[in-house]
Image (cartoon, rainbow, N blue to C red):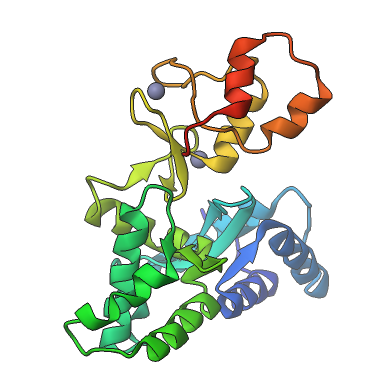
Length: 261
Ligand SMILES: [Zn+2]
Ligand SMILES: [Zn+2]
């Protein structure tokens, strides 16, 4: 039997809806505030139970609050997902046809790329290939800005990738529409857009998952094929400088790792 939906739950849902996506620490603060305001039982470690109560009441509406991870820093995020709209139709009411086409083409570039990023130059070069209606470069720049503001894309130094919100909302769509190229992380088993890939067996891992997984290992080996992990491990140099090398060659090549992943 599903737990009672209180005003605290309703308030939490309302705020999450207005934000679209929320970081774990924000969601925990909001959880506390909602329970205090409405004098509802609160325990700091019960956020996931609190959310599953909301989810059981959202089920008939084909909506769900889902937890996902930022591919950049590994932090947890929560987003409200509409399960009835499985495709980019989620965005259809907010954008014009050629804007949606530009988004789809940008998504292709990002997913088909090696590192999960597409440069603004490559994206802007798509504008005269649009079938629905051509777009001027200036106009396209503006549209990209809106995609970032609306949290479908995120941008860093002119390079675009999918925003955490987009990944949480469109995971199923991407996995079924890009079957041959979309990858699941070998550690957390969710969709991985930005990932490191094993040279020997081809499995992929998110950068934060790579960092976490290899933290406890003296020599980085692929969790699937046990071959040496030849990519640079993010954040590893700092740790190594604190503890002097014991293993020598292998460790050195792993710090200096020449291959760009
Ligand atoms: Zn992962
Ligand atoms: Zn491997």
